[in-house]
Amino acid sequence: MKNKLVQRAGLLLVIAAACAMLMSVTLHLEPPMRAAPVTAEQEPVTEAAVEPNTTADEPPLPPLEVVPEEPEPRSSSAEYIGAEKSPNEKLYMRDLAVAGDSIASGFRHYGLIDAEHNIAQSAVSIWNLDYFTYDYGSGEVDTYGAVAYIKPAVLYFSVGMNDVNMYTAEEYAENYLRVIMRIRKISPDTVFIAAATTPIFDSNDFTSNEEIRMFNSALEEAVNSLNDDHVWYFDAYSVVADEETLALREDNSAGDGMHLAEHCYQDLLDCLFAYLDSTPARDIIMKDLWFPGGLTIFIQQ
Image (tube, rainbow, N blue to C red; front, side, top):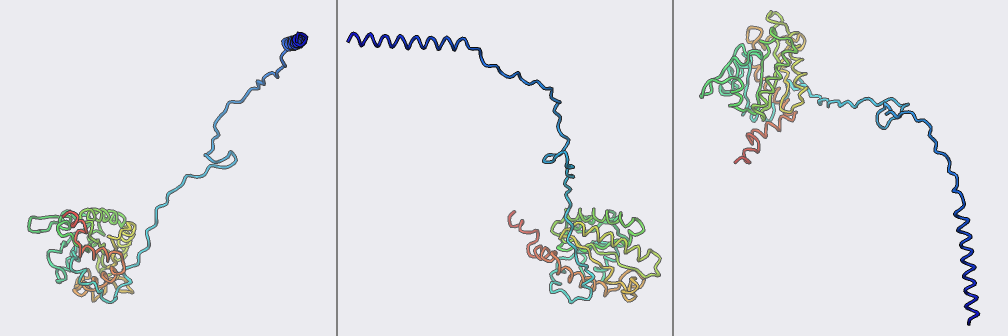
């Protein structure tokens, strides 16, 4: 037993001596050499003058341009000259008002509309529209006040003869649009018919039919640019013009080569109503006739 203890003690001494030698060797070793850090000069960093998602070799993309939608082309009301009478004629006539000059006042003069739906007088034009008033029982009101009072389903607006010597065609169309916008605000459910100025005899020296056509063309372009189903251009000029000379047809004159004969007014309405039947305005008018003011009146009650 004693011998085994001596042997174990000796073995432990040997192991301890070996460990001491190893530690001595480790402590005297020099640490490994490390590579010196690279200190190369760097150029200052600048942002590349290119658009995101592009490279220096690719030119920047041009800015995105928003192109407004082109209004859908509208058919000409002249296509409905001589068409069969509209089956909706009586409905259209039920709430039709006419505004404008002496040519417009012919609708009342010949009995096609009643006095309450007449907002027309001699010499009315776009440039002097605010000068004229109408009596609706509670006092004199201007054209806008009369429209606000009636709130018609359809407003046939006919001026221009007294404007051709006061404006350029562009100025006329621009100021006409202001009238439309104001009436649309006053009576938003009303379908506005912008009637073309009618022709005159070529022998009439008041103006020329070429000038009238220029004004009508500017008005048509302006109205169509609105792309509003409540606003429509009506080619009244073509309804009463001679197909060959483009002047006022002789039998359509009231005698002075400018104002219209009685039968012309029914011809104008026949063409207008046939045209409206082909447009979205028909449903707008029908809704206003059956539900004046729209469904909001039921909500408010």
